[in-house]
Length: 243
Image 1: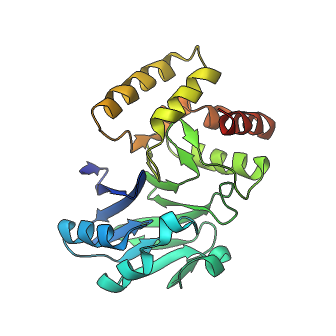
Image 2 (image 1 turned 60 degrees about the horizontal axis):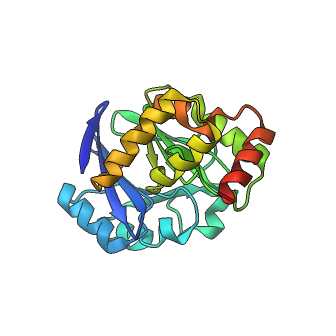
Image 3 (image 1 turned 90 degrees about the vertical axis):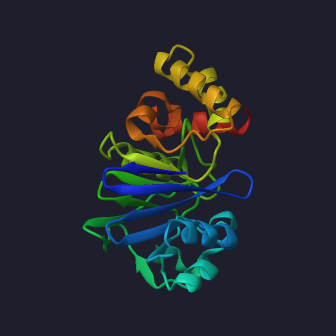
């Protein structure tokens, strides 16, 4: 399924059990984000026009990179990732540092570091209007803190929270329904959250996806984005792990 947004075409590509990969195009530039399954990724690119410039990797977990090398080889695309985490990624053609940019058609593609889920996790920001957040941020939730600390994870979420409110978030998993149940348990008086939770329940009952989602909506409803301090974030993350 593709949507048009701010000059981009965004194609959501379901993978594995609950993963989402993403294929983006603008002008003549194309990118595929976090291909877990090479065959599914190749089929998606072929369906959208058989062109691929970049394969972008948000972090080293196998359910985000397993298909990367085969996908890049099939289309002659360049593999892009975090220079600091290159030892855990497939061989990179372009190794970026925090706030480095590359051209993406008439726009700029910027990588920002967002550690917490893993120490090397990054987010790709397209022209400050689309952000591929991987497993750092989910709709109504965030990733598990496998390698980071509450301080680093909270800082990463703050970096995303300060992007323009209309930024469209491309998350790595369809976890919104379970996240909504937890969010309502810790923020029961949030009317915007109640509305979002009902919409999520409807969408999932109809087997429809809940993302992408605008940052503005998450700022109103996501308890992890709304946490004011690392200590508050840590309490929420521990509670969610035990929920």
